[in-house]
Length: 143
Image (cartoon, rainbow, N blue to C red):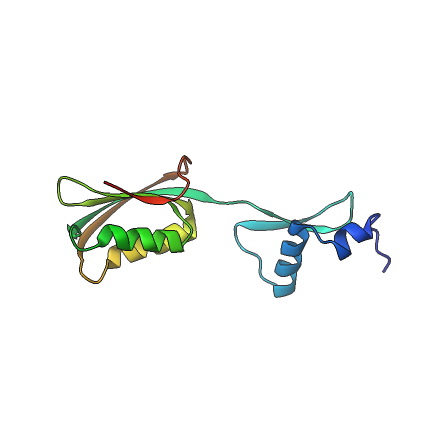
């Protein structure tokens, strides 16, 4: 079958980042739920467009969650998952978490929050889901 790409040097020898991603997805035969593949009619090359399904999780954790490194635990886990947002202690001895990112990663963070850190005891976790508002560059502890 003849290659219909008018600029083969652009797409084959010097692959664009989207083409490298497409080759990865096509080669592994798995496609993320947050991605889709389309074929460019103009160049005849496969591309991947990543659509981030960004969500916002607001959570309040009750139990023995202050003075037990719970904010540090939350910050480390959220950063490892690539999430952005904040965590802070509340006057009523609870901890509030606002996190934004991919829904699957937020679900994983929520699972970890319900489990808690080694020294903590989590009695109750409330969660509120909404659309991502943006405005966060990383995950920080608020004092």
